[in-house]
Amino acid sequence: MVTAATALKDSALRTLHSQHLFLPTAALVLLGEVALTSLIVLKVPYTEIDYSTYLQQAALFAQKGVRDYFQITGDSGPCVYPAGHLYLYSLFSLFTSSIFQAQVVFGVIYVVNLGIVIALYYHAKAPTALLPFLALSKRLHSIYALRLFNDPLAISFLYISLLLLIRQRWTAAVITFSAALSIKMNILLFLPALAVVLFRALGFNRSLLLAVAFFAFQVLVSLPFTLPSPTTRSHYLQQAFDLSRVFLYKWTVNWRFVPESVFLSKDFARSLLLIHIGLLASFALYLWTGLSKLGPSWVTSRWNGPLQSVAPISAVTKAQSPSQRRQLESKFAPSADSCITSSIPGTLTRFPSYYGEHNFQSLSTLLLVSHVILLGGLAAAHAGDALQDEAQFQANAGIQPTALSSRASTSLGSSKKNEPASSSSIGLPQGGSSRSKKAAKENGGSSKTQI
Image 1: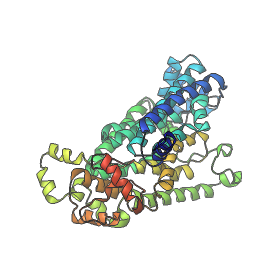
Image 2 (image 1 turned 45 degrees about the horizontal axis):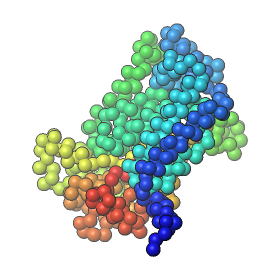
Image 3 (image 1 turned 180 degrees about the vertical axis):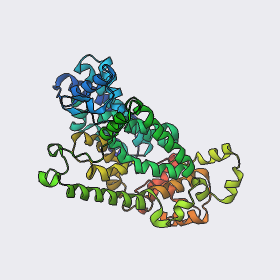
Image 4 (image 1 turned 60 degrees about the horizontal axis):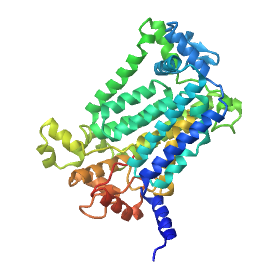
């Protein structure tokens, strides 16, 4: 006879490797965070760092009509963020009359942002046991509720963009991503992987149109500062997107063990840049694309989108009309692992000098660590993001692989002639096949999109 204690133990163990009780646990985590964040706002003293400066800068823009970025300054220095930063803090200046009200708004943003992250974890098929750990970061609570930095605003738009991406809302995802970049330049860390994901999903021509929309949004939000004169345009670009900016040693997190003289040297900066580029190249070759396995043919066969590379000729010819083709391609939902992993090289190398950067990695790192601990590690995976996407496409659309994609299937470790290798999550080694089959069965025979 199974006792209540045994049943409870079994239920708890299931949360370690499945989404058993995921939604109830998510609700409890969010309710707990509402209570905890409220207590922090009410009981923990606010610490002034940059918020008053942000409001001063916003007042110069919104109330005094200053359009020259060299003249938009505050107590802690000049404005070094893109136009979206000024727009948002102008709204804070307009609709909040006290620090406490602003803290309440940021507390709400924190809980909403956590809810978005939980939604991403749900799509990623992350185990339920990870959810409570999302609420344990003392620094995150501080960044949101006690410091009122602009990092949470930018990262919220970024996570919304990822959610739209896996839901195949391509234009909305790109515009939202551009909105995130208009708040803080560090969002550029995610741009290389976004470009790869769009190419995998849409091919070159449609990705190019989205790139135009991306840059058009940046141009639009910057018009108040770029239209008045060539001087204001130059000053805006220099301040908002200064890639050569030198960070203060006192704010460094990752490189505290390095002497200040070394940290501020040009040779050290060049070394970090080279490491950053090398890591991005490695990710692009071995994780984000199939270049390491298929070579240049991976690019050429996907130039017009995923359908040609993974579907047989008969399937392509049957989808003659744009609507028929879109219906078939709608079964292709790209992995967003790329966008999550793409910030790692930059966070470790080029942007290690600000405590607010913790916000860019804290919530996504837990998912990446789960790959290592629970799924065997990205390095042990038998598929990169790109090949995994295409295998999932074949499984969801019921398409038998072509000769080219069969090579991908071989590299994915498929051992059965007509069994797609897409049922496993990214990072899952061969030994996890039984688990992936169970997940596929629970989802109606097809694997969900892995984030």
